[in-house]
Amino acid sequence: MLVKCVRVGSGRCGIIALEQARQHLETLGLKQAVDVLDNTLYAAANTQLPYPVMLAELLGVNVAARRESYLTTRTRLAHLHFQRTVEQFDFGFQPSNDERLVNELANPVFVAESHQRTPPGPARRGQDPPGHRLWTSRPSRTDTALISSAPTT
Image 1: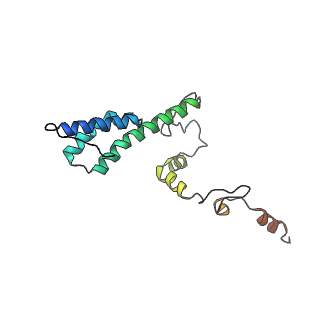
Image 2: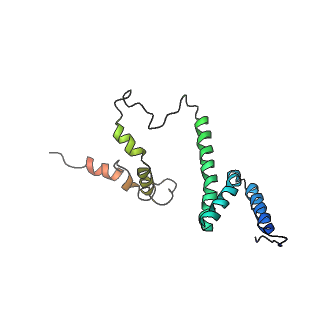
Image 3: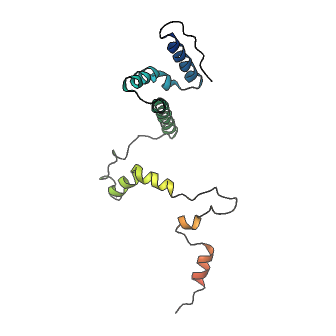
């Protein structure tokens, strides 16, 4: 949709377009983007930020706010008695937990790599997903049959 604007005076066209953009963001439910729209446009004009970068920053604010809201809601619905982060965990109280291993598994790089290791494709009804044997350590039925039929000495 093109924004139609008739130049009435100096700068009047930009104000109309800005109000239309604000209304569109509100209609889409992007409240956080509406709140930071003026500051983002001002910063983009001062730093000569390219339009795609400015748009990504504007939408990124809304994505971050939605994620925070999602996590807050999920945590509240979990009825946890208290909330702790990995950094706040007392490893002295529970010495069986390896602090180095927990910190390594909590590293965002490990989490991103583990998502790349998932087998591709959806699971079919009644069957293992494609590549399932590559990703599990349990033996399959044929492996178990081979082991049990092996001669013992």
